[in-house]
Image 1 (cartoon, rainbow, N blue to C red):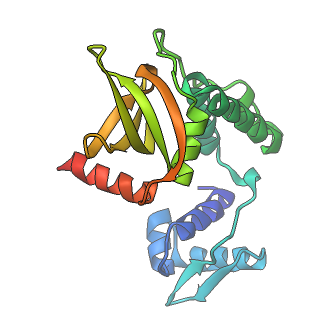
Image 2 (tube, rainbow, N blue to C red; image 1 turned 135 degrees about the vertical axis):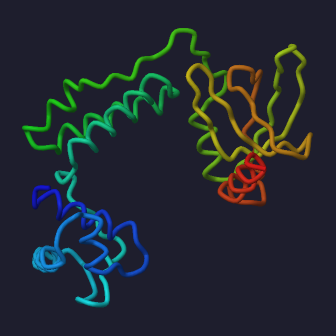
Image 3 (cartoon, helix red, strand yellow; image 1 turned 45 degrees about the horizontal axis):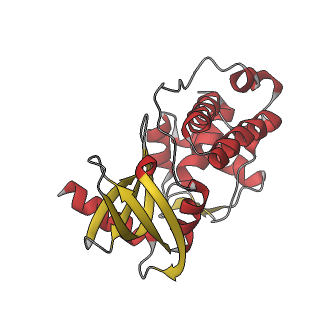
Length: 226
């Protein structure tokens, strides 16, 4: 592993840990010597990377540290661009525009020798024919998830039967050809999934649902695993 890559990986490992990690553990994960880790940590601290700790005890990275975007690896650039391509082809117009803007921002900050990975990526996210169109403003749905806003919807099921429901949206699932809003349904008093192409109308209410979206997602995932 190149030294620059190893320094980057050390920062990544520290960012993912809440508790101190020893030089021995770092050396084992990076398949190098403890002495090399000591030297790398000293170099990072000399570059003002906010690492706390000492030999024999362990190291932690102070919260709030952001690495320069130029330290993205080729694999990370390809992953980000491929993911953004997928969203650009399958997201609602606002989300798709955000994905395209993200690709442009990545292109603006990566070094010249990595720019072909952005502009001429060999990885392609192919949009499948037959993708269903959203019948609801997904930008506002995502905003409702963030602000805990309730929605009142008229929803048509696969048989064409329409029901009037008030839902608490907490997640959007993106499939190959359809999107689902995962929500707590006041009518059924249970979790339900609503295809965005089957929503006949939607009113975005001022009333907030009592739980956070994260708590609802956690409860939903627990039920799905049961």
